Length: 103
Ligand SMILES: [Mg+2]
Image (cartoon, rainbow, N blue to C red):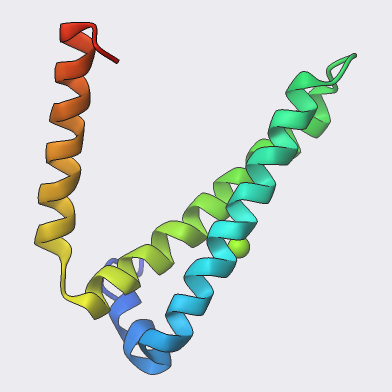
């Protein structure tokens, strides 16, 4: 099996920051649309399971797209450690809010 965990760097360097920023906007927009469609289906009368499964598959596709482009932007910005550190701080802050019941 091909290990492509570092291959996103090749893609990022091939297309460059300006193009990949545009891709990030596009992919985030597609994810929002996929999530909104899933939400509409769950809220509609007479839940259609097949439609729901397709909508979920679409969300998975778009999540993957966002993850791939996000990794590229983080790489091109050279900010992996900062993003990880900031994410950790945000998680810890939210856990504290939950435990303090201040959320
Ligand atoms: Mg997409």
